Image (tube, rainbow, N blue to C red; front, top):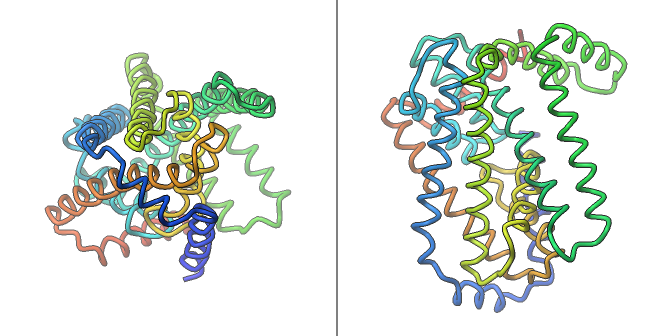
Length: 335
């Protein structure tokens, strides 16, 4: 209940900030003049985006149990549907539960591949955000400085991933010592982070294959390129004439913005992230808001419907899905 309350407060605050100062007539005009014939393009990009995600997850799982993109897709889409309708990103734990049940793979092992997946996502997103901020024209010098900071963060992320791969036990031991000094952090949180790091080590087996490593890297960058393209198409639909570099900035800010606690579906948060990103490019607040709603709904509705279809096919009810996701989280915290 506390998590849900905090999420609602953050969502309402973000939504209020995103629409503050916008005339309702401006929003109506933006939607009235928009080109919605781009929707098939957005849906096609979305299809390829999730196909690449499934392909990459199959690569991460290959050393554990060879599975095709088609085989992992139901669990993956049920998980992303869960993120859209369940609080606290429980969809991640839901897809762990579904895949583990389907193919008799230990849950901690499946979770390890999800952890590694997120590490590659972070690296790819940081790269796109840094490139967008550094090379986009007419941005203040402070933005350029920020891009250098992002480049350093990316480098540190790569170094961390490499060290984590080579000296797993040492890295986990180092984090355990750091957490022991940070006594103000909740014990459950530190335990959860350490356990996820320990679980993530099991998913590192795929990184010992050059073929799989190359495949995981290119699919990571390809899928986020497509996500940036989706943002660009959504903006062009509302006659917001920006370059792909601006879309990369929106991509990076939004990807990290949705990690904050909010209501399922990240409504309000995405709208604010679009405005924060696009104001530096001279985009009106009304157009940024309208384009963000179009982009979000073009993602939210298909993913949720497909996830619900697979959930129904697997005989998993929504109430049961939430209980199973919470159970997975509780079990992990209790390890």
